[in-house]
Image (cartoon, rainbow, N blue to C red; front, side, top):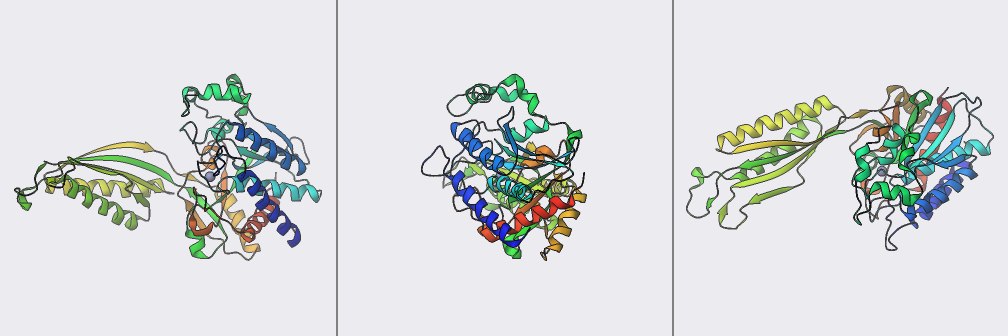
Length: 411
Ligand SMILES: [Zn+2]
């Protein structure tokens, strides 16, 4: 793609992001949720852009917006380029959205230059990734992957509207949901562009990164029991202070995460009885531990558990562990990562690889095809915040990288 076209299209993508930012249920900020009137308006506007880029468009049985750019051969497989069009409340303008719009710009470039590829391209704007309205994430991509869970129909939003009712209100039918599922045989691969949502690329002074894996997360609730007592009368050596046990546990989490090169967080802690003059008799806290390598993550967790149990034993405390979440890591396909690395080398960009600590639609799609992702640097690593920011120059680089990657795929 020549420079002027890339630059012009990158400018257009930035303008599109601004236009979508104006479609919100809250006039004060960006809030666009699944199966709402804003979702519908967003789909209509983006469908227009897809059509202008030479695509045939439709809204699938789950409310996802789809645009298809045909191949030379009608029997050819399809490369899916996708991300999500929904947002959290008070969101930024780029999370998810940027990936859909860069994909449309890449197809527009093909269309305007009369280039037809040996495979078809479908751009999908997933209706729900964030899970803001119904509390369950990845509804859009789960429908496309054919892993829709019938239990979801009774999920309710804050107004008490069930997912089933929201489908009807949106003009969709529950009984058709399975038609949103794609046949894995027809799919060449899934490729997603997304803002990094972290500070690593900025720290490396790089606009783009190749995602190696989407971290698998395990979450635990730990309950430490000691014995409450008078803060003035019980000597230090005779205490069973549950909060001190928890505090040592939190330090362990940090140290062991660094040792194993995983990320682990204690995001919540409570203790009781909770008075200035009472030794805490119980303390509970959570651990969220993630890695692109499940085995490494599990080893790190095992060490945390082993050492915290030993601390509790030595302090006459007991620790009860409950696992509250366990999702395996999703590894991005080596063969696509190799293509991405050669694309970045061709562009004179260092092919930097990094793990995604956040979840993405690619996780759901990995159930039915090989997946890969490009990350785009975002200012300060900030996301899920109105300050979310990307530069037009970085968007141009991402678009160039995506276009060059399309050239490398073959049927
Ligand atoms: Zn996202």
